[in-house]
Length: 179
Image: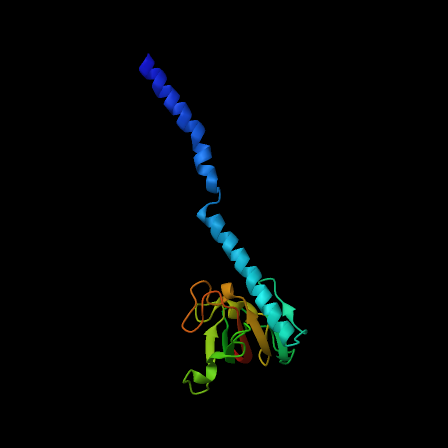
């Protein structure tokens, strides 16, 4: 009888203590990661806004995704907007936008060693960063825009080559052809 009583007491104690032991950090790893992503989105947006302010750029459109588009040249309105799955041929120059290395070119289509000095990709495929696919559906053949892309739609928390983790980027992007 004493043995059963002792076992029941220990079981009751362990059940009562379980919430206290697990409530020290109630966020799951996924919730913690989501909070980090949201914080990075705010940091990226502040970096992009600071760039726009420093360069007196006020004629921009902010997409729901956090991408900013600054028109330089508009293509003919008779040209339809680009759709997912279409082959898009571009000229581009990629630059950093943070204050410490603003304007430094990290890539350009002219360096791609193609006969046209351009870059082609299928919109929505793995051929380009997600930010390009989201931005180009707001563009048409003949458009040239500054496309400011938050890090989570560029190279994210891993970075790539000379691009550090969590780095928002600017692309001077011209749409040469759409098929």
